[in-house]
Amino acid sequence: MNQSLPLLTPLRGIAALMVVLFHARLLLFPQWMESIAGHTQLIENGYLWVDLFFILSGLVLAHVYGEAFSHTPRTLGYGRFLWLRLTRVYPLYFVTLVLLVGWELYKARHGVGFYAGPLFKMWEWEGMPPFGSPFTPAEALPSAFLLLQVVTDHGLTWNFAAWSLSVEWISYLLFPLLIPLAVTRSRWSHLAPLLALTVLAFIVHSRGTLDVTSGALAVGRGVSEFVLGLWLLPRVKAARHLPMMQRDLPLLVAFVLPFALMQFTMTPQLTLLLISSYVLLIWIAACQGDRRSPLLRLLDNRLTNWLGDLSYSVYLLHALVLLTGCELLHYLAPGLTDWWYAQTHPLLGVVATLLMLAVLIGLSALSYNLLERPLQRRLRRWGKARQPVMEQAG
Image (cartoon, rainbow, N blue to C red; front, side):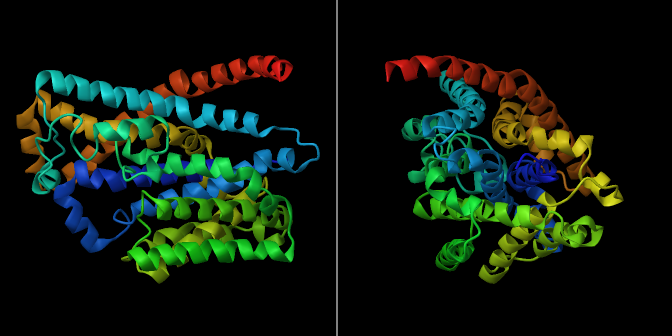
């Protein structure tokens, strides 16, 4: 399947920004958190956009690598596949981890304690020593550098958003076993979404939420949704030329539905309905053809694709911008942070949020062009040059 999958890149950008707002409510605008939640649960439910990432990842990997793994003999080896994925996710993550460790070392040298605003002060986190806060425990560093924090009790440590990368890595390890779901449409393949939704239902009913970020249940959450993405690919191929896929109304309904569901407090039933709405949205979005449409121009344009390209940098850098930025501001100008958290005018909150997003997107653009893509290309060239040597040695 050589055709591109439209709209998926903009969806990644939207999901990344919604996750940023979910975390920003704790650090940037906690004084408005309750009042916003009184009107809409959209930001409170922002953690669920990570689940869209998992489904997207399964579909995109099946689209890119499915045929290579299904041919006999394989045209892409397992080791080569893992190297390609590692060069995609690890370099920028490693850079963010080094920066976070460097900041903790600076804090240790200058006697700076943990700071993240009034909510964390209420939770008695303020003033915790470097390498001693729940976000930055020294004992979590080995698993963090190995991208295995999700299988420990330290899922939300260091770059706290990276617990999902840890789940992604486990999904990559399982990819060759799961690829038949992406290349066949047998009647048995219909069991895949049922099993995936059963696992998700078990998690939601046992924990009361899908916000599980460490341990076996977190792995089950991500891998189940990765499976949903794999399962979607044959359905996308089969439905691309259906007349309904060339109309705006199905796309509009599918796009609006997740936002509508997120207006409400999540129950187990509503959570599963939301995941199903993600599947519907991705299915319809991936089936869009090259047609003229005001809705498509609104959703799929240079700006939305650019934000989608930056989504990985946005996702990884927002932990530094929010948490390290908050500590740095308090360290340099404690009076400014005290003044800020005493403000209550909503317009100030909107302006500050837009300013934070502008800084984050600007840094992400620099990261994408100077770190993320160059490091990926260099490592892939190095790996390709090493491959004949390894084959000869073998």
